Image 1 (cartoon, rainbow, N blue to C red):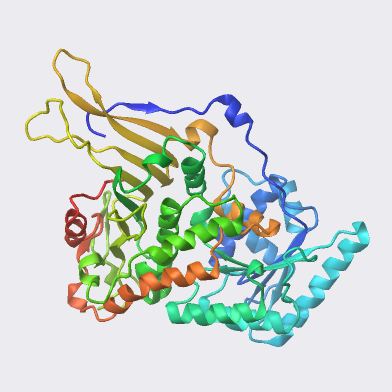
Image 2 (image 1 turned 45 degrees about the horizontal axis):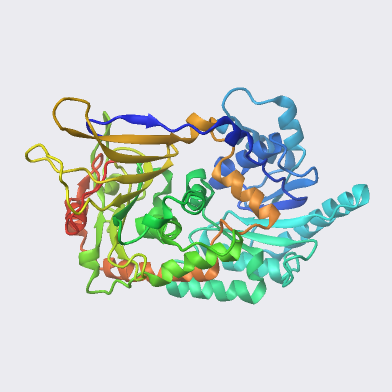
Amino acid sequence: MTEGLVVPMDVPNESAAALSLPERGTPCTMVIFGASGDLTRRKLVPALFHLMNDGLLADDFSVIGIGRGQMRDDEFREEMRDALADSHEGAMDASAWKRFAGRLEYIAGDLADEAIYARLRDRLTSLESDTAARNGVVRGRLFYLALPPSVFEPTLTHLSESGLAPRLDDAGARPWVRLVIEKPFGRSLESARELNAMVRARFAEHQIFRIDHYLGKETVQNLMVFRFANSIFEPVWNRNHIHHVQITAAESVGVEHRAGYYEESGVIRDMFQNHLLQLLSLTAMEPPVAFRADAVRTEKVKVLDAIRPVTADEVARYAVPGQYGEGSIGKERVPGYREEPRVAARSRTPTYAAVRLMIDTWRWQGVPFFLRSGKRMPRRATEIAIRFRRPPLLMFPRTEGKDISPNVLTFRIQPDEGISLCFEVKVPDHDFRMATAGMNFSYAGSFGPPEHSAYETLLVDCMLGDATLFTRSDAVEAAWRIIDPILNAWDGLPPERLPNYAAGEWGPAEAESLIAADGAAWRTP
C-alpha cells in the first residue's frame, strides 16, 4: 500500500478462548489405495500423525496401505517414518511414532487383481472383530483413492462388487462406509458425467467425498464466517458497491516432478475447474438457510449454474493462455516449460491462464470476476481481492495526475493467511493530502501458527461424515460446463503462440489487456 499505514487487527483474548475444540474422529479403518505414492508420503501420513498427537484420532483407528510396491508391514512403516522425518520439524518423538506405527499395515498387489480385495477383506474383518470383542465399538470404513484418475473406475467397481464398500442409502447406517476421491474428477464434462453415473449406480451421494484441499484452508473457511457473521459487509456485497473481484493462485515453482501429469492436464484442469471455481462460489454465494452440508453446497452450485457460458467465439476475448519460458525466480535462473524433463519440445500445454467470468444474478449482474493462475510467477500467493467502486463524486483536492485509490478487501489464502482492508485517510498536515491506509488481520499474529493443515481438517470431516467442505456431483458437472469451451478452444492452439511470458513475470501481456478492458489492473499479491 503506497504512502500507507498498516494497522494490525487483534482478536480479543476472550474470543480466542471461546473457540470450540475440534471434534474427534470416529473409530474406523482407513484404507489408502496408492499408499506408496507421493500424496500418501507428503500429505496423508503426516496429517494422520499430527491428528493422533493432538488426540483427534479415535483409539480404534488403523491404516491399511495398498500399493504395487512389494513390502512387508515393517518395511511400509519404515518408509512412512522416513516420510514423517522429511515433513517433521525437529526430532520426532519416539513414543509417538511407536503408537502410530502400531496402527499401520500394508498389502501389496495390483488393484486390477480380485485377490487383493479378498486379502483386504481378511484384514478388515480381523481389525473389526478384534475391536468389537474388546470394547463393543463398531468401526467404519474409509477408503481413500490416492490414485491417478485412470484407475478410479476399476477400483470403485471392485470395491462395490466385492462387498467391501456396499451402497448405504441410510446416511445414519452403522457401520458406515465412505470413499474419498482426489481431483481431477473427470477430464471433461462428458467424462465427469460418466464417472458420476458410475459412482451413483454403486454408492449413495453421502458416501462420496470429493476432496479439494483448498477448502480445508482456514481463510477459505473463514469466507462464510466473514460474510455471514458480520452485519457490516453483507449490505455492500453486491453490484452496487463492488467494481470487480480478482482471484489469484500464483506459484513460483515449475512443474517439478509432475510433468507427466501436467502435460495431460494443464493449468485449467489443475487449478480452475476445482480450486478457483470453488473460491469464486464461496465469494459469490447467497446465505445458506443453515450451516449444513447440503444447504451450503446448494448455494455454491447456484453460483456455478449462473455463470454466463463462454461461447467458442468468445474464448479469445475472455480467456488468455500462457506458458512460461526461461527466466529468473529471485536470483535463480530457471528453464522454460518446454525445457523441463518429460515435457514435449513443442508443448501447447498452458502453465498460466487468466479468465473473465460474469455471474447473471441480481446480486452480481455487471460485476466481472477475474481468475488467474500460473506457474513460475514471482512469488507463491493465493488471494481473493474485492475491489469496491470509487465514490461517485470526490470533493477533496487531489495531487495533479493522481487518482484516489479504490477500497480493496483482500482474503489472503496462502502463505500469510489473513484479511486486509485498505481505505483513504487524510495525512496530518496543514494542507489537504490523502493517503492509503490499511487494517490487517493475521491468523498467525492473533492465534499463533495454524494447528492443523487443510488435509487434517478434511480427514477428520470424512471420519465424522461432514461433507460441507467437499464437492457434490452437480457442482463437479457445473464447473466442467464452464471450463469445457475454453479447453476445446485451446486444443488447437498453435505451438508458436507459446511460451509467451518469462519465468519470474506475472503472466503474458494479453492478461493485462484482458482486465484493462474493464478499467482495472491486476494486483500484485
